[in-house]
Image 1 (cartoon, protein in one colour):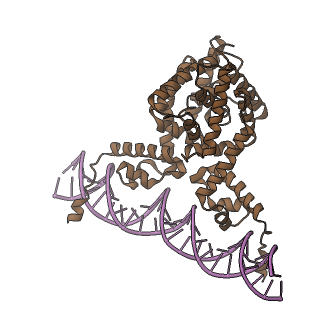
Image 2 (cartoon, protein in one colour):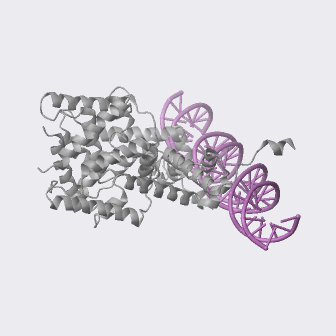
Length: 200
Length: 200
DNA sequence: CATGCTTGTAACTGTTCAGTTAGATACAGT
DNA sequence: ACTGTATCTAACTGAACAGTTACAAGCATG
């Protein structure tokens, strides 16, 4: 039959299909958030059948969890902080979320769709705070602001421009995301974090 | 009929009902975001009939716009910045979003559901940036960071703790939103902004 | 080339949702 | 009191959605 011949089945490759679906889900969730994301659109984006989503990932919640875990892991890995150097951390994180807008948006959605954090994530944050405390004890950074607060400030500062309200980005004039503007902000971030953490 | 007598209609009061619906919508959108919010739940929260939502506000989009506008106006008003004092601004904004978690969450949802900013909002941000620039020219704050960037940093810092990822809030140990902890962070915010904007 | 497991597809189901219809009751003007 | 308009209500509708069913085709192993 011509109909049967017309629709050609995709070549069989479980791992590739699974990866495609996860990628498509990441984009979809990044764009619309959990509630706004559509299962059918994810399958369509991936060029795969919807049923496979359920085979490979369970349901929408588990799929979201899989996406969140992958993205948060990647961000945590891309911006480590072994020696409590908040400035280096800030720039590394800025560069990563600049190159991976999806990761930034997923993290943001996740914060607001109040889902329970994993133990691994909690541990990662704890380790970072401890690294900051260590740097404080070593006298490398200021001690009049608690480590957790200092870290929270720096964390948010890395996203200040990229996740700024559109009205603020626009108010500056010019393209807020042009390479030149972004580089200018990157330099500003470095300067800002340096003077924020410096001994008073 | 006993049935007819059982359901008592609410007393007629258009403005009060409209206000109740707007308040309920604010809570619902703050909690679930636009896509996650449910029209039926909003009506139920308000103790009003669903139909009235459509009479008073149009559709879900227009209702969300109404909520966003009210909340952003309130935040902008609560944290003015006539004289370019970023420190004072930061504390005022912190105090406001602390007392009004809904306003903070609405603003965040809005940023991520990429809706077009109103002219009024754009103008408000522009005015703030100009106030910062004026303070820079007057030599009151540092000039090696562009005004827009400096403002973006401070803006995000006011929410750093209250909108921190749950994993980060939890990593500190203790109740991250207890009055004592919040006051401690408030002091940290003041210190941080002061040394961030200070002349280098 | 049989058999059984994996990968894939289309069509379907039950539910939930935004938005509507049709009508009832209060209230103001005459 | 009579009439029109604003306020309010329950029940409905059609579409969209997450999740399922039933089946087809590839692919490895005997």
